[in-house]
Length: 330
Ligand SMILES: C[S@@+](CC[C@H](N)C(=O)[O-])C[C@H]1O[C@@H](n2cnc3c(N)ncnc32)[C@H](O)[C@@H]1O
Image 1 (cartoon, rainbow, N blue to C red):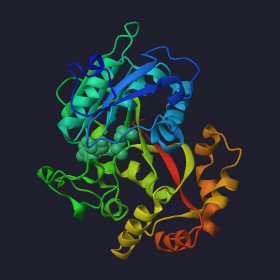
Image 2 (cartoon, rainbow, N blue to C red):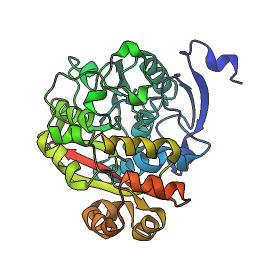
Image 3 (cartoon, rainbow, N blue to C red):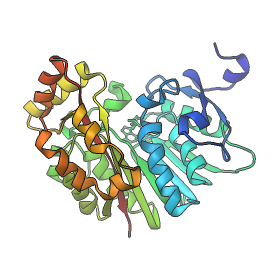
């Protein structure tokens, strides 16, 4: 149970405590509070501090932010599109040294909680200018004169044809508003429409030399991800490349199998023992530089989602790669 102090003036949601050093796998916490007290709004993704290996932020985002810090720290202005609980912003403050942050999410209840979570866990020793607003992609941050050095996005992969209205109150992870912008057909074919529009919008929000990082576990070929950045007018590279065993396979694999039957993909899956072997001993830095080579090594073992679902039902472990695409303004 949360203490009354913890929940005083807090937005609606479930309280959660996070040991920041453990969660971010870093020795000391210097720029935010060491113990985060956060509220997870009902529709937001719940961070998994009790099992960091199952959580995107410690396993995919934090390693990417650490590589960025090695190359560019301190990064002054950091933004997250689709921030969820806002812990990605706290990670950006701690790991990059950001002192101006911007965060959006489509649902106001999510941004109310994220705003509270960020402000609640700042350290008095590292003042931060915080901008959090609800709405579509980067548009809520327009008109404030804000420019960012790094913009992070981990938006859902959704076909445009599944676009719905906000009133339908779908689960946040599966919501996509109807889009007015032109989306290249290849981007929709790979369910990357939201990522594409976010990259195209980012051009107006990036400082010179700034870039977007997109974390993509979409079972999608690397050349398609590269093309996404190029068509949005940005210069692509891969910051890091890793893999995940398919979690909740009973739910996820049939849904990717259905999408293939509807003409999307075909998606890329691999046996877990092959992924383990090919990625063994490859550092995060090296994985980004050698991403295409690694993809070629995996290629003979590649199966579709439909095949992966069959293999999974026969007791085989399957997984997919995760790419962190860096799209630079140049
Ligand atoms: C997979 S979660 C990512 C949460 C967090 N950034 C992370 O990496 O753990 C995707 C988030 O994007 C938000 N989202 C979906 N469509 C959006 C849109 N059009 N504009 C802004 N946020 C959106 C969802 O509500 C959800 O919180």
